[in-house]
Length: 438
Image (tube, rainbow, N blue to C red; front, side, top):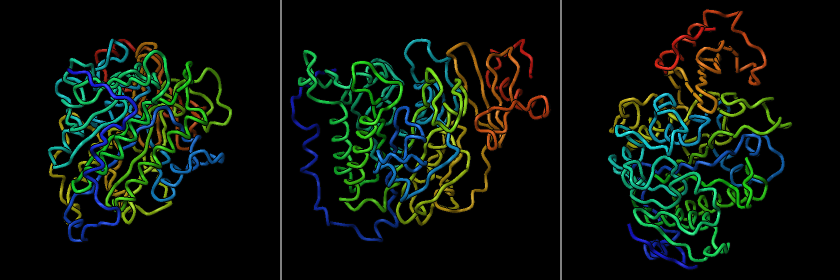
């Protein structure tokens, strides 16, 4: 490991020399056989109620609102877990929350058998990069970006470090990048400025190659006392940076050849009721915590201004990305040239994105929390079950008609409750002995 210092110079400034004229374009025949680019933007604790595409009227997110207007938004999208590191692991590996060790036991690390979407897309011929927050590996472990299939990496390894909006150092591949403008408690260089500059440079340098860029935007808390949710000014910073990235994609004539996906980690449990939220309470595994925005734009492929009520979750991203990683002429109905790894449970939603029939229905969705012992939840169709502890009674909700989870229907539908209880039992069998099913 080396330490590299920079002052106010732009990171990866050499990228500018590799750029091509903005008006330069490649032939249609080239794009018919080249794999499309993929950009995944992961925000931290941004709720649907904060975005204009989902009904917010304050106008604070014009670029994200445009993303929804030019593409598709999902109204029943779920994060991977209420635990932030576990959720990121679900997103990158296609596994649900039950595949990981109990959260909270030290620093999170991917197990040795985990395979990330970065590694799979690189095997399929993509240049891969992750910028922002990793959160699922320690410096000496095998679960850091350079060892998990990513060619380029800049950012925070730990989520705790990511709370520092003006860090004195960031990771740059295997080295530490020293940010001298933030030494001695100065606030001269926000980390997001470097990260978004690296993102636009990554796109520019790799214009002639299929690329996958994972932009895991840092928590939006530049104040000394971090807020549990992004406030107006910091949410606008996220929106503006996404706008910069989309503008660069457009300037390079890559918009029609790039699928852009935006989503968020779980919302934190607020200290009280959120008066304007679409759900009245925010327990660990409630809809209020787990439902997140999910928007996708691909001009000419995804019908603009559309909404889908298909139930999707973080683990669906990996198979969707692999489905994308084949030339247009052979995309359907042939399978992806790189198969999902063992243990993945997601379903590709590329047909839904492209406005085609989606023949496979969502399976069981599973979440768990370890904040106060083991709590579990599962969704099957329109039904959702929550169990606060292995020995607790199971609560059953019809979440399509009751997203606030106000009416427990377990007594009226004991068969459905029992089926979902079995799902919870089988997912964590070592932890559920001695409990009652409902």
